[in-house]
Length: 397
Ligand code: CP
Image (cartoon, rainbow, N blue to C red; front, side, top):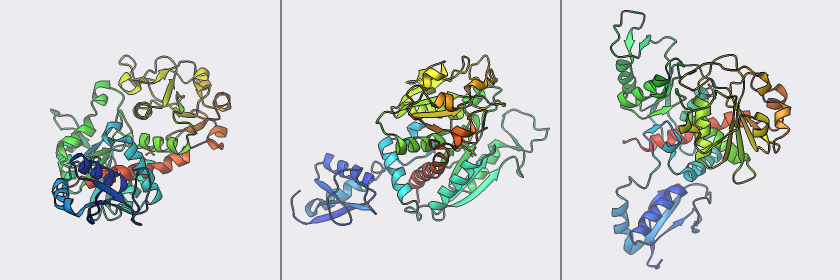
């Protein structure tokens, strides 16, 4: 750059500054990124404390400011909805943002000032409830929690129903009303496991997206749990010792019929980020290929575990149209224990929790030194903070 005096045209996070610099340079305006000590920053993965600045020559300042006046593509990662991995955009940026927030989780505590998060639960939760509320508090937001089944009117969800039963209010009025009282909505609504088409349409979540008038994110819906998978991914990135670890997701027995949301999301996210993913389960438990594309399916659990770097245990019910929602096996030889872990490459054990001990995993494995279940749960605060931050950044004043 010529030295006719440098002028600051942007101040913000390193990854945003990289985008601004590229945009300026693509338009023929030389630019450089400086950190607090006025040193040049050469990589978006150089974590700097505090904001960095983008500098241009004084003679380019007016043109640069005009170019940047439209900021729509300087913040490409702002979100309106968060329901799937693709909503995160550039995954490297998402990960660097997660690590940045983990280092300094109150860095954006002004962003949510006078903003309200409404968390709507149609189903129970411990981790999602606490971690998402904490994330909102990290960002300075106010939080309202609504447990639909405790104290709210019983809601009808189908159109065309004559409402002469016990349901007093229709979701199609309740949703826009909820939207009046908040800026962002998180929704937890599990699969009912009776009608596959209805579950896989994500009817409740999509009605919130369509009718609330507010940005909506999934806190686990019928077919996916993206906040969990984001936290799982952060956890693996923190612990992996090879670039492309072998990640094995194993079905394990459970006494109740459970949805496919967590395994769907986990398979989708881990293949999307390019890990070597193997899914093992008894025959009949195949997941929808749209989620497992890129993963290998291995029906022999011991063979699947060989050389694994990470083992992710989870139960799910059958996903096929023929047996949708059914329990086809409670074979406890699939319970993850020392026998399976001994053929791995000293693998870490993961589970999203809550977990049924000695059905899904033995006491020894979950309590062992390679168990990541608590760090995984802790990272739920980080994934939720990144998601809420990006949604807040997309709100108009
Ligand atoms: N993993 C998870 O979503 O936990 P909760 O159901 O307790 O929120």
